[in-house]
Amino acid sequence: MTDRLDETHDARLRSWIASSRRADTDFPLQNLPFGVFRRRQLGAPARIGVAIGDEILDLHRAVTVGALDTLEPAVHDAALASSLNPLMALGRPGAWALRRVLFALLRADSSRPRPPEDCLVSQGNAELLVPAEIGDYTDFYASIQHATNVGSMLRPEQPLMPNYKWVPIGYHGRASSIVPSGAPIRRPVGQTKEEQTAMPVVGPTRSLDYECEVAAWVGLGNALGTRVPIAEAEDHLFGISLLNDWSARDVQRWEYQPLGPFLSKNFATTISPWVVTLDALEPFRSAAAARPAGDPAPLPYLDSPEQQGRGGLAIDLEVSLASARMRGQGLDPAPLSRCSFAAMYWTLGQLLTHHASNGCNLRPGDLLGSGTVSGPAKENRGCLLELTWRGTEPITLPTGETRRFLEDGDEVIMRGRCERTGFAGLGFGECRGIILPAIEPKA
Image (cartoon, rainbow, N blue to C red; front, side, top):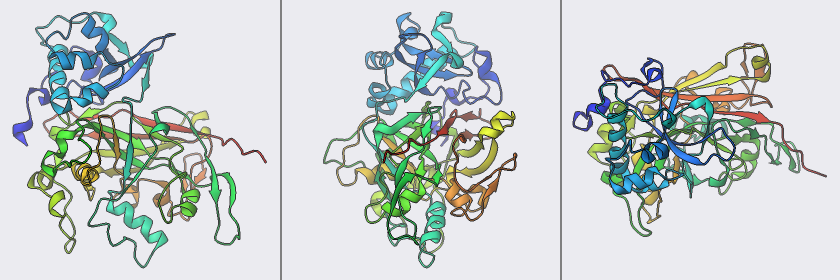
């Protein structure tokens, strides 16, 4: 791994932006994630920004004043765009080049002139947007712990389907309903059927759930009819965000056979607004999770020494919840679960290679969800379906309220953090959403 590390990972280096020097910041000098924002003023345009401490560096403004004049023409033009798609289309080399120039500009001992003050915007004075125009969204099922837990509820005699250990399972999601962190989530209405009833009914879901996931953004695409070899998979990945795949479990239970999730999933998906590049995550690479004895090795097109040795990412994820009553009493959100992305059965590189293995053309800005991230212990379960075991083991909040599934007014907050001795810790920002009441169907 050391040959992929450079001065941008040096924990001794600091930025001249004071808030980026706090030990608990998500956005130290070594991170520099990309996003899209709008200044909170009437008619302000969407622009690409870079998170640094509590600030956002406005790339459009920085380019305009000449602060980034050493960029190659293609990267220069991409920095002026209103979404990350042009930068993503340049592949990892484009992100790498821009990150290095930004690092040189923002480090405390920089020889470059500091940009004017109006190049920086407080994150509190900015509206954070979905960072790319998402053409397609695919959600996977890459945690064997999650798959086993859910399967145990539905098929105790055979929790895992026969194909699970051979092929990364996924389904096509809905790109149009992906929203940025902070956007409210309307409780969906759907068709459900209880086992003891003869007919289904239509009404608001009574089993609304979250799913704690990691999202990978496609950078460099591939032409229709071509494949992406596993050795090249990460050249096609731009970066990582957090994702909440909101789910209506009662709708899902009724509709999922034979073709899988549909209306139970596509009403909303929340994405965290900052995209942490794979280059920033280099210090936190890990070996792919070891497969239990007796499990098959990945088929050759999904296997490589590189993926086995460093295909994982050591991201610690946590989920917390604040009910309306908790917020009214000024209580902090209650922790629900913690889990590690390093334990996933399938790596992000394997997900991308499998997606393109039939000639499917991936495009810059496409989004791949990991599926719910869960671990072996109860506190590692990444959704309420698992955490309350289908509602049979309710959790208790600090106010004494209990939850089997989400209630109106509940706010779910997800965070991710990477730490390793000798390196600056970094994070992803928040992925949060609050539940609004359903709009009841008219008779």
